Image (cartoon, rainbow, N blue to C red; front, side, top):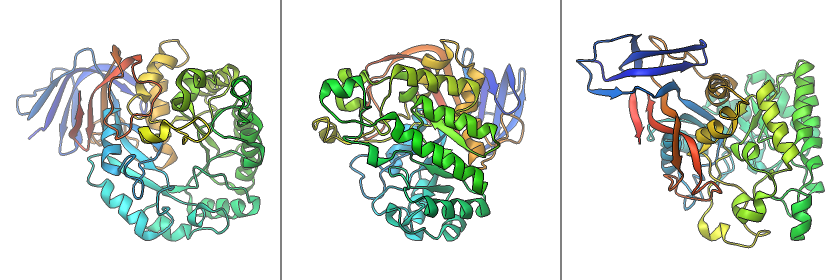
Length: 423
């Protein structure tokens, strides 16, 4: 029996480049039929989707679910619920949990709990033991046990030769290494860009060079080792240009941009305070526009949220004491539509490439699009619908976008043929 019938929906498939209106039947977790005026009489559920768009489920390669260890901020179940509400059917958890995800037991815990969520929860293991940047983890063992890739996100790997060894091993295993690019030697009071706003606040801040210098180094290492290196949450014009040059030299470097870095600049700190504090920080307007241009010309491959939940009590601390980061899963698609598609920087199809196809390809995930036999992992949304960000399914609410009017509302998220979110 067909489980779900979707009628009159606009198909937007970045895999095939298809854009058309049709009906879709879903059976046993897969697409059973695509066509006009399909027979939906046997469906358990019929979705009348005229005016809505269906696309492959969104994939976020950069989330922090704080589980194990810091579950008062978020856990795997609440994080996955937030992801589903944002249209994401797959997420990749970072390794900076407590304990660090650098061992078989913690990796198994994350992956097994992820199976309880209704979406696909993957995990990166740490590159170095306890993320201390001194000794490599057993990357081969962790890969065999299900690690999607490797990262010390939250901390840069400063030892060049140690990173070289890690990239050589990653190249052998053919898995990506994602890198947090900030040189702490150049930073005083991280989370705020060093510039006009930091001077006004009397804070040292993080200069652009702290990111640029690390990105330049690691692009060269990627070229020398042949490894798949993903530059995380890129924020500066100089780093975008470094990735652009590296790609032209034939590297396997990819880059991701967070929604806050293409929507806000450093002046947001004056308006939102700690809700605009993050690592790397919000930069200048010139940097913001450079990130958009990187997305537009393909230098930046992916949009990833860097979903970073914190409690209200933590974010209420003074600016120099509060933790960095904001949540992002439930606003990412709408921010992309509002700030990239509507102004004409990207087409909606290109946005789906950045939020679904390219992230899936980074981790070698199935990319079959919307065709018969493909996995039924979909987001259904209305790109023209305006809505107000009023609440979150995340356990935390640390977002400068709370109360904002955005375009692009998720109506349904379907994963493995089941509706896991419904507006």
